[in-house]
Image (cartoon, rainbow, N blue to C red):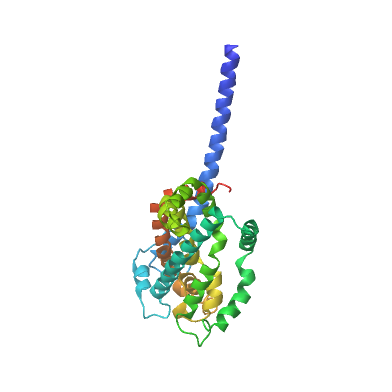
Amino acid sequence: MKDFADRKNSSMKAKRIVSNTIIYVILVVVSIIWVFPFIYLLLQSFRGESTHVVDYLIPKQWTFKNYLDLFDFSGTYPFMRWYLTTLCISLISCVFQTILVLMTSYCLSRMRFKGRKSIMKLILIIGMFPGFLTMIAIYYVVKQLGLIGNDAPIIGGPLALILIYVAGSATQYYIVKGFFDTIPKSLDEAAMIDGANRNTIFWKIILPLSKPIIIYTILITFVAPWGDFMMSSYLLGNRSETWTVAVGLQNWLTGNNGQNISLYFTRFCSGAVFTSIPIVILFFFLQRYYVEGITGGSVKG
C-alpha cells in the first residue's frame, strides 16, 4: 500500500514538473515576442552608421546623435513640439476625465433613481462601439466649431482632441463603480446623520479611501491620449506644427510617399523609445495601485 502511494506521489510530481516546464517555456517565448520589438527599437536608436532600415540588430557604430536630434525645434519635423503638445493634451484630458469618471461612478454606485440601470446599460453599449464609427460625425462637428482646417487656430486641433477624449470619458465608469460598491454605505449614512451632503461625502470621505482606483483611472486616462493615433491623424491633417507624437512618428516612416523612412528611421527609433519613458515611469511607480484598483473594481454591483 505504501509503495502504491509512493508511486502515485512520484507520478503526480513528474506530471507537475512537466506541466510547469511547459508553462515556463510558453511564458519565456511569449515574453521574448513581447520584449523583442522594444529591444530592436532601443538598439537601432543608437545606430550611427546609417539612417535607413538595415538587416542586422546590433549597431556597428554607437551614437547619441539620434536622441540629440530630437531636441531640434527648428527642423521640418519638430519632435519636441509634438512631444510637449501630446503631454499637454494627455495631462489636461487626464484631469477632466478622471474627475468625470469618478463623479459618474459615484452617482451610479450610491444614488438610486428612475432609469439608473437603463442608463448604465446604455453607457456600456455605447462604450462597446469602436471609436472609428463616429469619426466622420466628430470631424464635421469640430470643423463647424472652427477647431480644425487650414484657417483654424494652431491650438484648435489639440483642443478638439481634448474635448473628444473628455466627452467620452463616462463610458469608463464600470470598474470605478465596482470599487465604490466595495466601500460600506454605512459611512455615507453616518456622515449624513452628522449633516454632511453628497458633495462633502464624495470629496472628503469616499475619495480618500479610493487611492488605488484613482491611480488606476489616472493611468488609463493619461495613456489613452498619449498613444492615440487614429483620431489624432484624422483631425490634425497635414499641419505638422499641431501633430501629436504618434502622428509625427508615423510621418517619419511614411511621409513623402515613403521616402522619409530612409532619412528618419533611426530618429524614429529614438523618438519611440523617448516617448515610452513617461509610461514606463508611471507604471513602475504606480503598478501596485493599478493592480489594487483593477481587483477592487472587479466586484459586481
